[in-house]
Length: 142
Image 1 (cartoon, rainbow, N blue to C red):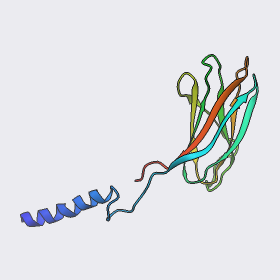
Image 2: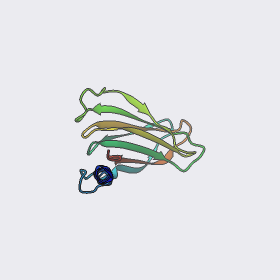
Image 3: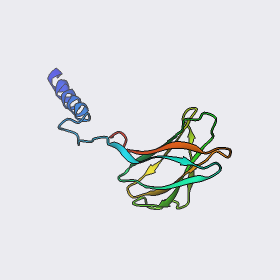
Image 4: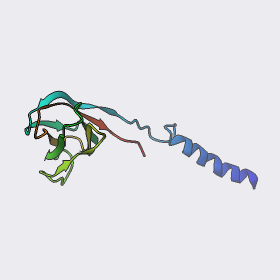
């Protein structure tokens, strides 16, 4: 009876090990990369606009940083093309959230081919230089 119990647990242990990329589970690799990056300036009260498209099924992470802690910039992304995302809402706008004293971060769905109009909105009182970086992250495998 003990041998039968051991035989049942052995395959379960092998399957658990296979989930880590072993021979019994399908392989999966997390991918990250830069989709777009710019170092630019936005006029006082103005805006700078860019178009970004997702290269693969992933999350898109948009990060806006600047050096003047007294400046207040805004970042937003508006869907302008659905790509392979069936039924997405063209025109849906997502505003960024603070990511520290001089930064904003925005996480959006990056279904392959999905396109966004990304706007950096300037401080009302002053011109400000900034860096906008958009990366993709396919996430963890399940």
